[in-house]
Amino acid sequence: MGGTDHWDQGDHLAEAVASAGLDLAELDAAIGEGDHLAEIEQNQRTLDAAGHWGVPTMVVRNEPFFGQDRIDTLRWRLDQY
Image (cartoon, rainbow, N blue to C red; front, side, top):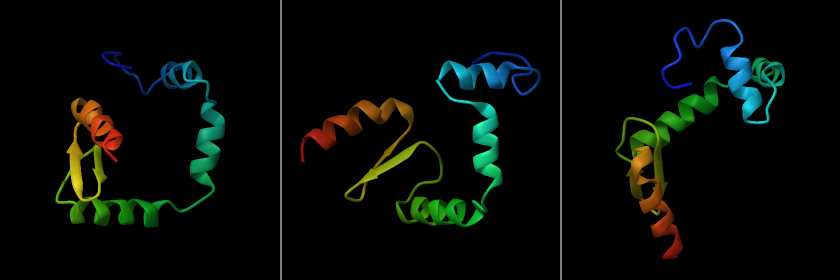
């Protein structure tokens, strides 16, 4: 939604989700069905253990790749295994 004013209002979010082939009502229902706090807390502990503080952070065999500009490097590293 880069640069869209008031992206959280009106149909902006639903349209963005639909353009990805998903349904916003189904996503909202899935979020509402469970307590995701435990998973969020586990993800934070994993991120802390990797020595990082933000997203996106991917870790492969204890090697962190931080930031979307590192995804190509991550893919290269995965090809090494």
